[in-house]
Image (cartoon, rainbow, N blue to C red; front, side, top):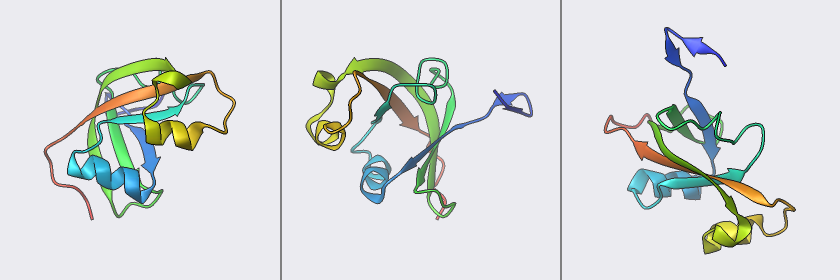
Length: 107
């Protein structure tokens, strides 16, 4: 894992506009991804810095830290998330909880 100036490199999480804006408004605190090499206990370590980005661009980003990580089954996914993932054939999903920094967002 890369380190920058002695600090752990932030986990980059690109989001679609809807989910990004829900984080921005404080309505969403947990992101769900398919569990695997990119999204697991090691890569999503509690306390690790995180960058939430609207898409892959640099115009809109939010910064925070991972506060909780859980591996959950499909039955534990919230309704809208389950609707999104229903066609995928995965048994386990990563639930990544994030607390955003109070610093202003980049636009």
